[in-house]
Length: 218
Image 1: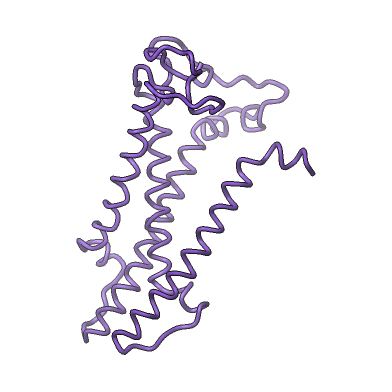
Image 2 (image 1 turned 180 degrees about the vertical axis):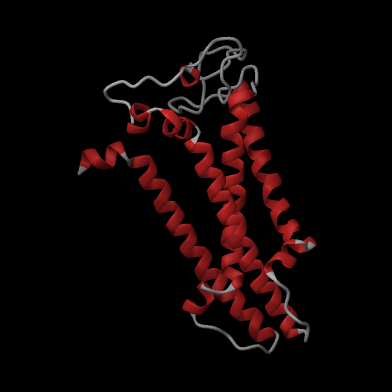
């Protein structure tokens, strides 16, 4: 058991933090939502109803959408683009191990051994998975946002709109862009800071004694 936790400690801690934060978001969002309902003379909801309501779904997937877009774009962009001196970039002129053609070694994943279109799909599976998760989060953000938007319209005596129509509103794109810009900023800052700054022991940093011009982690 100790070995299992040692070998998987990074993912265990990250997913634990994720669940703690989601629970905190749900609990505080529930209180905020019902407080707003009372202030506007509207009925409150129980916790289960809140979790299935537009207010919570919109807030959750609005953020997931931006995270998966950031990661998917970053994975794809780092295939082609370089940043001199950054630990987050491939080397400028030297071949990298991740660029080589897949070889059907005995310990290779089964899609590599299978070959053909299965291997070609597997070669791009990381970016494809992230972009699919982005698309699903985008759709759920739109659905949750439309539900919340329609609730507001109903309270003002206005007719509801479809999810597709809601996607065309400035409100939807304001929610998206305010998250997207922060994600790309944070990655850009990491790319540039890793040129000059170090964190001993982190695989996201170059070795502490590496020159600033060294590109890549090793």
